[in-house]
Length: 101
View: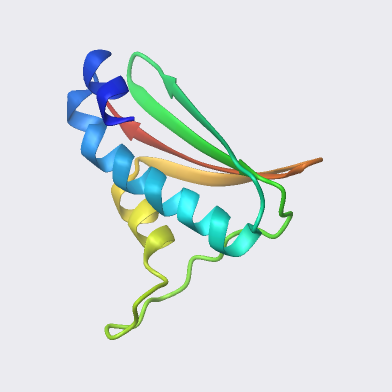
């Protein structure tokens, strides 16, 4: 994804998008235990990344423990993205974030 963003003029968003995408994909694999669909949309102002999985359960933004080894993914998405959300659908859900270009 980093190369895709760099070659399409979104250099400044590349590192953050790669990190946040990794977090959402990891959450989908670990918690939804389903196949996923990844979508990246490059707009004039933002990069929007969404991860679709088959679980209807929404992700939970919870406080992380200092000594914890997990539980920081959504906190990172919350802090580093411009906005993010969850949209349920008939096949599970879509978790998405946007980062300014």
